[in-house]
Image (tube, rainbow, N blue to C red; front, side, top):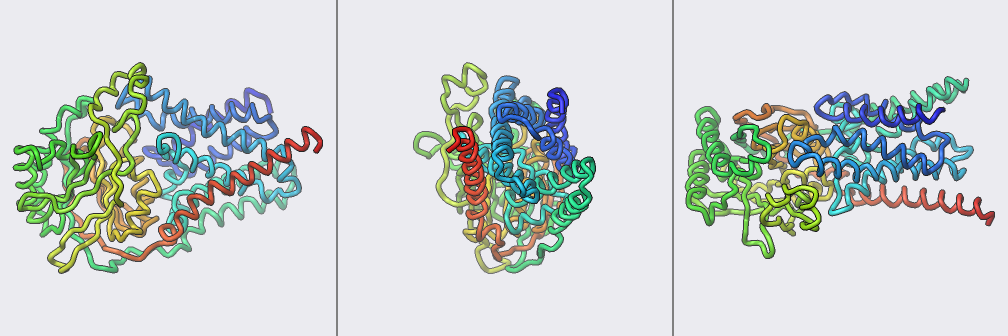
Length: 508
């Protein structure tokens, strides 16, 4: 294959992978994309593989994280996709080393699972480092409308990605087998791929209530599409959510909990009189406690991005502090250096510091005559496996993802986040609410189906009586094994391949 053809395959493959994700959401294109990359990497050197993998990653991430351009401008956007593209480059180089080591010689059946194992290994690594990682754009997040998504109940995002990538290589390999007139391989590959893609139907997803139901009112107060100017609209945001609550109570039945999104009350109602009056009025209208997003400046060395449970009588009933603040957005590492690339860093006057408690708050539900454990996830945390898994493991019976998408414009950021929330619903077996300031907000069943949703940059309200569940899924019970297994096993395979190549080079 010519160098130009490989470059075209890798670059086009990255673009195609983005089309598998929201907003296009053509999930089968993930199979096409990964097959294109596999073809492009066949029979080349590790250096060439590194370059082609980086090209693939950049071509995928540049449009995928376009929302970063809308939020903070061109330089941070370019820095994000250029740096994160290195994970794809390292994956491609790793695969070439394994392929050229002879480790898979006479093991044609191991090619697809090994390629998939290495892919997921590097997905896991970039989800952890640097600065806590950036899990955006994992293959699993493109598959929520495919049967394979059901496997999240068993093994979370890593297993969904693994099976999808494995199926993609099997299909691509079948085309090669047809060209090389290997009928057995040509028939076996598609058969196994189809089985893998459909095996999710065998997973016993359950939407039934196990510990009752909880009645939720969800308010999306909305703001004009102002980009970074949204940061200056804190009063308006809170007022809009009060107005939305007034509309909601006119038609909604009784509520057990009123839900507002992240940053819906940025002025802490414990210290700001106007904010106190507004949020207390909303809780009294709903005749229920209010879960809202607020800033808490009591943190040592910074502030907490908090989810406050507010009483109709005025006062905090419970609180969750975001554990995984977003680097260069909520806190600024190397601020002086970062400022040289974008003055937007100075919009973050006080860094968010991480909380150290699981995302679970207790809501007293009179109707059930008990406290309900509600899992709280704030914004980008929904992309991080351990944060969400910990909430369910600590007893959460329903999940609420509070988010603020006001400064991302008319991009796919919110719907990308929604696909993650859907996967978390399946993974944990919990009904999940995504509550956004400007959209998209949604009510998601435990099997990942969207039951209700709002538009983007609209003022809307939703009401939902969702099931409460306490059964722990395999993905929650054994999540650490899946998480670290897909790091350790690829590392062992790559280590063995590098050793074989070293021995061959020096004839040991």
